[in-house]
Length: 233
Length: 209
Image (tube, rainbow over all chains, first blue to last red):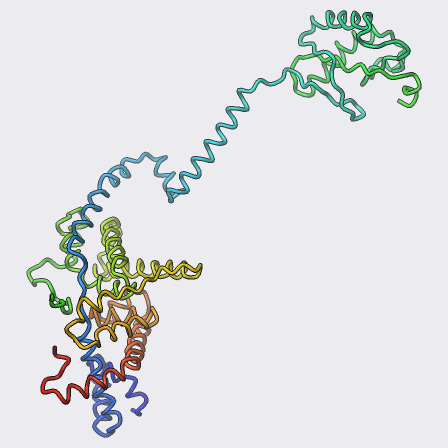
């Protein structure tokens, strides 16, 4: 063994932690090497000081008492956990942290609340607007909720036209979305009353049904356009 | 002035039940057995944890937490290992986490590491000041060396026990202990020389006091 190696093991040697063979080898070296022997002496002094001068501290006198209080408080919690039903166990498995469980509970209740609000809100019986076939949005003048109403609504519209609350003079009424009757064109050649009747009953019923509005009939907007405007319609 | 207690090794009677027996009783929920375990280990653990954290209150908290875990997780103790090893593992992990947490806070500019040097006053009054010099030197060791040093020198654990508690190979433990001792010696060298000169001139070696 050389000096370097010996010095590395001197602590172990002084504490007799080394294997018997190594102890002997080091002892032999120390006997023949005064430098290492001095080092060994110093190291054993260090070990001695470490041993003597390390104080022992004790935890405060009420340590056990405090601990046992906490242990007692644990007990009921334990019982509860044993009484958990399968879904509670599952919940605790999936969301082990209490914080996370609260967060999930919060999120779920928000979603439920949102659904509840959505469901209780009265759905408009018919969407107030619909898209015409060329993509422009129209408002509806009149909403008819049953087939029987169609006639009276029609009568009502006629009355309003007669009263002039819907302007008519000098203009051609163009029924938007009017696809029928194709053989007669869309250009106002059809008598308005006729158009209306058929429109309401045939056309709008289909459209409303397609858009998921139930059995409602919508009278489309009667847009007023001058003849010149209508030319490029 | 109260005389500080010395090394806690063997501070219980031979007639006391062995760890394993107590462990089985604790597992069955026997709080009296648990108290015996607490009394058997609290001083030893406290001396390591205190020197790791450098703060008495925090050390007590961690010690409380350790025993609380020992009790709470009693089902999870595997009797093929020593009970002491298991307890040490819990304590050391808590210690490590605490140090990590403090380091993180220090990174954010909040210094949680309050060097509380009460122990220098507690026991060191009647002595030469080596005691606190020694403690300071130990405190200045890097954590991984400090841990093994304390387990070895203060608690007198065997290298095998340390290796199991820390979950690191035996050879690593040995070399770390040796390294720690050499580092400590380097820090203490001037002091030791001084002490030695003093003791040579006085009829009785001074460190016996």
